[in-house]
Length: 274
Image (cartoon, rainbow, N blue to C red; front, top):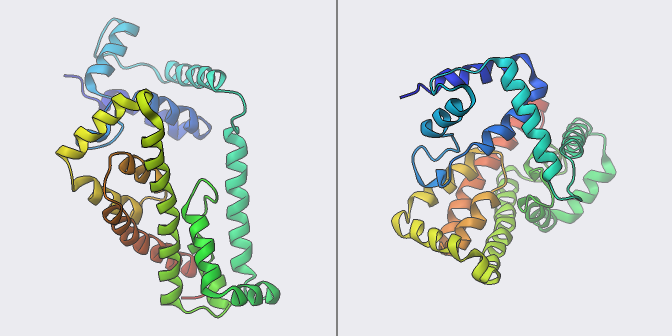
């Protein structure tokens, strides 16, 4: 059997030498993922050895070949360009998304650094109180609307007179409310899909029947420690008919851990609100 590290080493060396190729490398890695990777340990979208051997043999005539780094660079660049051309028109370019994320990060830094000087903003936050914080957290929890967790503004809230424990609890509860919207989207998709999604529905139900509790544990770990939208798991689990109370309980516990970690991390960085 092929040692998978043999093909991964050139990718890693190329990634270290050419950081600008990271988007193309990640896109290629995602394109190589096997079907049903989420149903088998280690539950990661890693290419299978058999597929790697087949790709190497068709390209070089030898399943154990290790492609040169320059050929990998040409391949991932070409494949990324082809996928870009095949995307439907109207999608937001990745560069624009990156600029928006950087702008939001800069805004977060500016707000927390100037929290002590922004009297009008602090007065407005104090007037909105915990209900306003809850509403903002719901919007933040539905990450397709606002991709930055409200917890990154924790120092600003503390400077505005909020108490640490109620603030963290309100943020976690609000973000869980946003995840609830994701669950409802997944549930509605199940009802609207009809025959077009019948095959996926059957596979989802079979997965649910075999692994009832493992996905809930993975959802808790994901929500607590992975800085990505919870909807990536909540929506499919709603489609698989996982009960709403169980999904929301796992997400709420994870959100408590995640937002507490983010809040104290930001407080330590800015030296405020600890």
